[in-house]
Length: 258
Image (cartoon, rainbow, N blue to C red):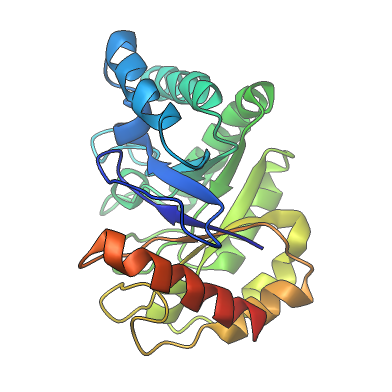
């Protein structure tokens, strides 16, 4: 498995033994609501980094709704087209669809209608992603962060409903640990659907190894399905440059000993 770390474009990243890739933030790296000139400036910074920007997350800001009565399909699709075009230039292969506030079902809105809105959106975006050489991964988030798609099993159900090769799912051990979710969703999804992994200790969201959590059962499940893809640290850091080498080494140990 390849190990990465989620960063902001302002963070100074040094080459660390065992670290294979970087994952940025859509509003930070791709800035889809800003001009092409501004994106070009960000692109220079990304290309100066010591590792490839293989993925980006936080697809939608809260103000761009993907469920509910106020979804502007034209605006959403125009935004997505910009994201994919710029992600392709950055070299990202994975775009993470988390965006809890964007996809949260408004109070009083029919949940099945919201589900269909998400499915319809992903069906529209799948061919665009394929043309850009990108995979969209649906990220389950804990119940504290959103009220729809809260487990790996739900993400897999949505991906199967959409049924497009460029729509896959993510497993996040932080959210799984926070909601006491077991490994059954990973095992049922299999490596054909599971395309990306995030991890952090559910206690204060520190990197694994810097908190008490043992996530080897999740990594063992990944091995059981033959997963050999990316695993990315998405954590809160007290001292990023100082903590990163130990965090990468600790994650590698949990993977290797699972």
